Length: 213
Image (cartoon, rainbow, N blue to C red; front, side, top):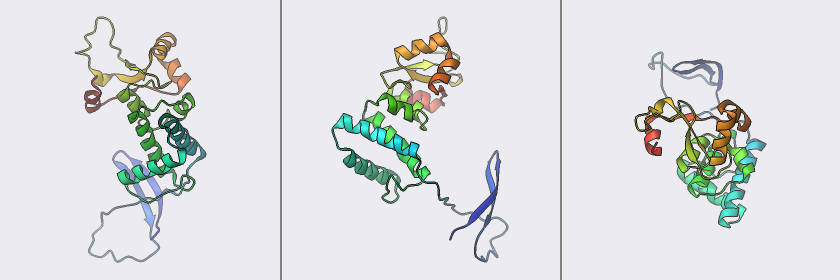
């Protein structure tokens, strides 16, 4: 049964809304409040930009592994469905939410397999959720994809400060190669972030421990 949702109101603890159900429901005995599962269908189709990201990453995986693009498309779909469930899908006819999750999945594969991403692929994927964290985890430069070190981007650990005693919770982090680390230092953090459209991220205690910072 399809329902219509409207009058959305975002509050601190979540989102409230009203809804229309095209049927008369007998809610007697349920009280004023009822609970249940809500499945929201994304009616937006995959965007051209999302398709470009997917094919750019699959192309880089193909160049690295030697496997044909069509084989990799099927393989990655199978692995995605095994992990997250769902039905077989076409990259031309999926919703934006599924496309976003598939992009995040492929990106993680690229880092896990140590696939060297081309510069144009890096440019396309910088805004993907978890990209900056994956760069930190796998020590890849967030700008160019080369080997990188973790850069304390705020509340810097510098001379005269004990790195072991530094409170990393108050810092932001980004993975940068030596070239881009020096560029960031020379032109300043704000200019650097604006130039490459990236920003350092804060980490919770679990992430700091996982990354060995």
